[in-house]
Length: 386
Image 1 (tube, helix red, strand yellow):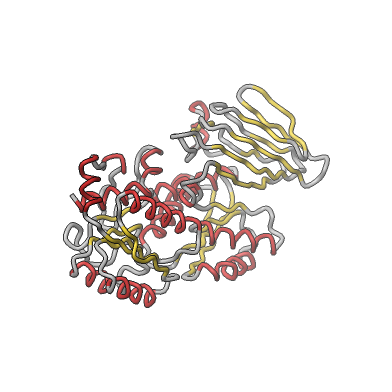
Image 2 (tube, rainbow, N blue to C red):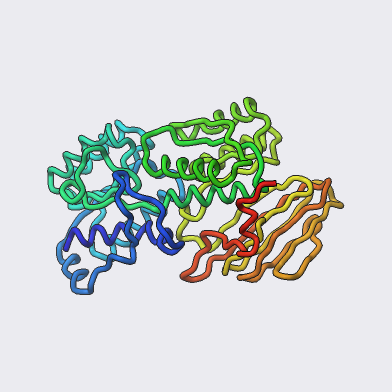
């Protein structure tokens, strides 16, 4: 029952969003089929028995300098508190293998019953995790798994979001913003890190197979998120014809945006992973810049969550049109559109005027925004060739 609790605790933290969005597209590092968090639960009697155990836990993160990691830590602490489990230590390896190995050795000296961790490298950290397993510590991994460790004997479970699905959505958003045509770059995590590899695999496969008029013309890998600006700078110089860049998660994406601004490339589309970075939030906010005479939010789509668009143009006389359901509205510099849930809402800018807009979607209770719903009668455009 204690093992059942550990699996239930971890699954509740990060799999919920993937389950809500429908089909789970990701598999585990060894091809394991994913299970939804809703399939695991504890009875009141089981919870009471766990609380009587006076168990302890340690958390060894790969990195804790972003909102995602802080949200995971907050969720873990809240859940452990609920079940009467004391958190002995929380460590941050800062993406350094040697630091994580040292962290694991340090927390083992505290004799925890539970270890939650995201391995920095599946090969180099494996001996340290095997030592923990041999000591009888119940281990749950998040997002990555050490090599040659046996599930059920050396660790309880691997927990993750639907990262393959996230990559697919990022590709669809890129294609939407570019109008289905353009040249893009990919800035990827150059490490043996299963979930970040999954995101890039899904993004590139979706672009290649679904959007033949979008070409991936440049790629750049990083092992330190703090050096992404240099990689993006070089990519802009090397490939000035770029229209967009996909970056693996929010911090690298922010570096790409900063680089684009510094290079005067305010026409670049940047996509990354969004909602999973802040599952506790009530709002999703994004930005887009569209070239003269181009459509946005196209093909027409809708979602049950309400949305607001705020528009700016590169010239004060710039204008365009916002279609909300069956109604058309003129948009001008500084105007906005309030879109009720359930109505389609494509936008278009007039030839000669570049359009910027900020979009804001409010999550509904129990129904957060995670994806768009394309209007059925226009889906043929997704595969059309002109």
